[in-house]
Amino acid sequence: MRVPYRRMMEALRFLLLFVTCTLLSYGIITLITAKLLPDNPYGEPHGNAVKVVKLVNSPETQDLDGYLSRLQLFYVTGE
Image (cartoon, rainbow, N blue to C red; front, side, top):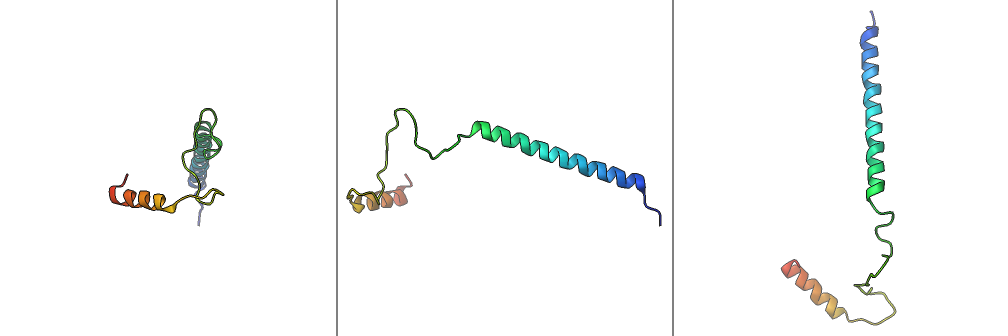
């Protein structure tokens, strides 16, 4: 049985070209993503930022009725 050498080389060349293009496009997308997205999106903001929400497990006492009423309003209206 004769092995088609030329056909195997074409398939190998196509596979190498496909893998190269895939890795190149992945690298480009990774670089673009690194440039567009912030380093830490959940970090502390800079400038004139205002804290909007107080945490429930903070040392200050808070009423949970306000949270429950807002949650019920969200479930009813979706806002």
